[in-house]
Structure formats: structure tokens, C-alpha cells
Amino acid sequence: GAYAVYTFIAPLLTAAIGFEGAGIGYVLFLWGAAAFVGLFLGGMANDRFGGRRVITAALPVMALALISLSASAHYLSLSQALLPIMIAIGIWGLTGWGFFPAQQVRLIGISGLRAAPVILSLNASFMYLGFSLGALLGSFTLTRGGVADLGWVGGLCVLTSFALFLATHKSDHPRI
Image 1 (cartoon, one colour):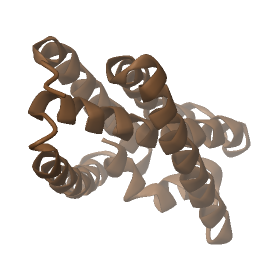
Image 2: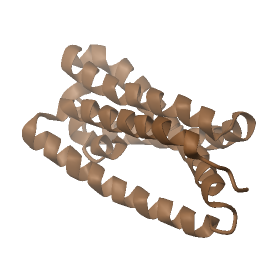
Image 3: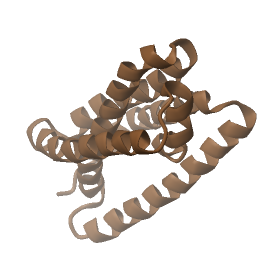
Image 4: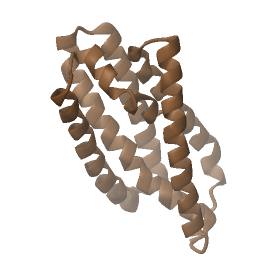
């Protein structure tokens, strides 16, 4: 879901807040800095609260951040949308990457330490597949809707993944 939006972030920022060129670069820097902090904090939160709690907090908040991008683009003027979109992008970076340490620990818990290298490499492969499918879905969204609709689609994908997590998390049997 996040990559349905990220792939087309430049046209979204241009349409929603009028940013071009260097302005888009600054926004990408904000997203990347938030992702770095999220990765660090997600690991710490995982160690302190456990992966299930981190995932349960991160995914719905990330979905709301993505949805708020579309809501801001659709319902606010360029000047009104600036702050909500910057906040949403920061939260998206924070939660999107804060989720990964907890997901990796969850997968290791399911597969066991002996299979950890295999399960983590499969996770990385599926992440790249997800990036590609997200870009494809974003492209489809642009052909059927508009750039301001990307956040709705991304948020819906993240909410779907959260529902899948909720449906399967009871079957996790840690083997560590």
C-alpha cells in the first residue's frame, strides 16, 4: 500500500501542495528521516512491548496517514494541505519502517531460529514483490482515478494487511 503512494509521490505533492523540484526532495528527506527514526524506535518498541503490539499500533496509524494524504488533497486548498500532508508523510515514514523489526521478529518466532535466514530472505523477496505490486496498483489508480486517490488505495491496502495480521496472529507459535 505504501508503495502505491511512494512511487507517485512527486505528482501527488505537486497536485496537493504545489511542490516541485527541490520541494519534493525535502519531503523525501523528511520521509527518509522519519523512516530512519521509525526503524530505530520500532526495534526498541519491539524489544519492550513485543511485536504484536508494535504491529497493532503501526499498521492502523500508517493507514490513517496514507488516507489523510488523499483527504488533504481532495478537501483542502494547497496552503491548507501543507501542514497535514507533512505530518502525514512523517507519520507514514515512522510507522511504515517502524513496523519492519516487529514483523521480522514475528516471522522468526513462527519459523524458529534455524529457519531464520530463509524466512527473512523470503520476507525481503516478498517486500520487493510488494513494492512492485504497489507501484502497479498506483499506476492502475492513476488510470482509473487521479493522483489524489493514491492515499485511499494505499491506506486500504495497509488496512487489509492489518486485517490479515489480526486473522492470523493467534496462530503464531513462537519457536525461539
